[in-house]
Length: 125
Length: 125
DNA sequence: CTGAATCCGACACGATACTG
DNA sequence: CAGTATCGTGTCGGATTCAG
Image 1 (cartoon, each protein chain N blue to C red):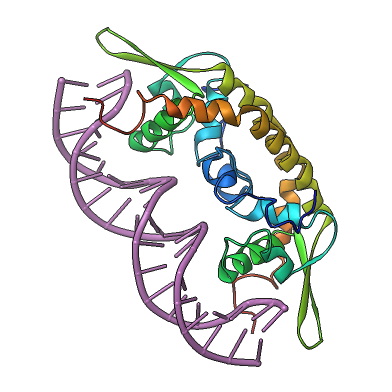
Image 2 (cartoon, rainbow over the protein chains, first blue to last red):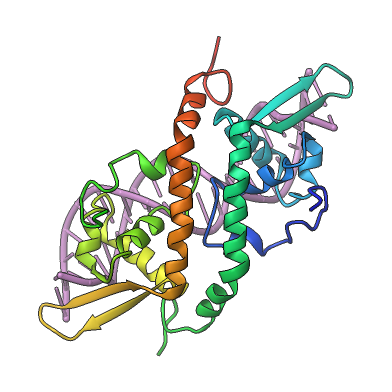
């Protein structure tokens, strides 16, 4: 998988309908983006182009605080900052893989269940 | 494990600090409560005594809408309603078990990382 | 390029009280 | 017993703008 492919996470499907979540909305996708090595801020923004820099920064800081990633600033111009998974962060990859496998297998059933009304919101007469 | 043990989920530890979550805040715990068979509304409230009936109802309805549980009303007095895992809902048990194993193994490291300041919020000078 | 500052809406979650 | 109704709160996520 290419973590820089802009279509790796298609626009609205993945985490909005999914009944699963690792941490907050974008954490799992960031972890996956960093799977193959360190990435720069703007590189992460490519596949997560539906986030704003503020939210991306927030999420990265939270992951750093939890010891999932490291943040390295290089004293250059233009500035360069690289994010990389820690060993602890790498342990999440397996977990995410399990979740993705679950979703691949069962998400259609969830969506089908949502189709038939009868439960939840909505007046029925 | 006894899903009716009030201390099955200790007060503040589990899902608040956990960087993982299945669905919303209480879904995973409800699923686990239903592992060994159908349970009544008030039985689920025991181990989840930190929820309000409103939130519990909301969560149960969402799980029902997603096809994870069934809701059966018995025409008796006093009323009796039972919730039970569907086959689809049972597939979440494995996933939750994986998450719990991850937490057992790595949560201490996460908490340790949070202890050392230097990142995130908080003034340091 | 890598963010920080500010403002804002939506929604999850909860406390409290009441009902068939 | 199993909810509903109402109200309040905080947090998450986003749009926009600006800075080193």
